[in-house]
Length: 630
Image 1 (tube, one colour):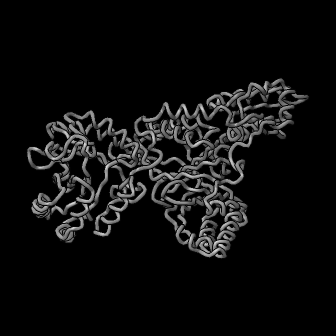
Image 2: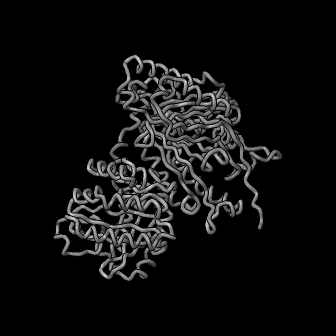
């Protein structure tokens, strides 16, 4: 087999994403003196890291993380891995660290590769274009954007028999990466990124850190990229972590539950209504209509000693690239004394920052001015963005960027009421896994069909193949139970609740669907109308999922028959069926319904159930898992 030549790469700074939870119980129980010491120590460490007191180059920042994965993300970039190692241990010496626990971390190094026009940068016999060189160096030694929102996720390229990224030719990979980059360039000025390689350093191959002032810009970018073949055919994604940046000095406010950043202008676009008066005067001198610029626009004026025609020829090529970006307003060259002036206007400051890196390489450039053109950077945007979100609401798997299924084999989870949390806790005491409290696992859908199982399986297999394109899809399969009155069940597991809800719309179109587990008035797995009246939903435990050791499958089925006899005599029991995956007979679930939650819990508390759980430890490949509906 032909060995593929890997594209060349260049590496820059090492990157550490350090995710931590705060022990809130310990924090609330600590003395005022201990809390003050912890805050002082924490602020001192974070400010010293941000000020690069420990290094000659790099960057550090701290973010408040949304959701259950963590409370804090501490992001460090340093020239050497030794400096990262020292920073990690130095943090652990602080009094603040005693109130935190690391829940996740990711090690990588900033990376640029020889795709999409950058080949000359890696060829010592060619002179790379200054713009390309500047672009590569900006990726290897990035500035942290002043954006408030951050989204981090690790990712791989697929290595499956029919979808192996590494079996593609360089030309095919470069073409796919070019198309992928075209999408990203449409968001220049709205979303900034740091791409870091992690092959041999951490669990995935790359880490991606995205920065934006508006979180929906990140969502829209990633949603659009899902449909690009580079992602839809060849990308695998890990968990996503999202947060808001705040200054280290606001650590006390964060711990007190106050709004952060305490200074609303700490991050993001700092355009003011007045704008930069000197810059505005300069633009007016060249006849630029500042009033026509969008609210919050940012302008650049470069001075060059080169001949104006020479500069115009160079800018003509740059302008063609700039016009690929939605944030570009104008770029023009004007005669200015014996030299030239280059004026470039962009919708956002970060887009102007990027353009400046290319414009400063123009012939004869001596200096430049950059600043706000005035107006409210958010003016008119809120209503427009809200309308966009409404218009896009409900599109298939539109929030896949937010969460992904856990490949660790963790079980489905419970979501919702305090009653479910109590149930989960009680199940855990009995050795049954009922999921984590905030949706760390998966969301389940179960629909019952009166169609022929063979026909149903063919339809589900085709649907499942389509679902597999989405990272939040865990599994969709057909399960069967013995007995003529037990309809086949279609089970679909997803990493996000909204993805599961959207999938439900497709699953409902499968042949012969009679109901979905959890529907009002649907009381039994066999749709036994005598067991419940219309409008009486009962209490559906959804299912106990089991992975049975192959050599003990018959023993397990026999035991179920015995327990089924006990269940039939229990008060409040409606119906229970044992279902097996048509593709894997050792993958089973028990669908059980009761008149009330308390009736169900009476069974879980019974000696018969305890004996069954103890017996199951010898025949199951994993502990039983209780699953709640999405």
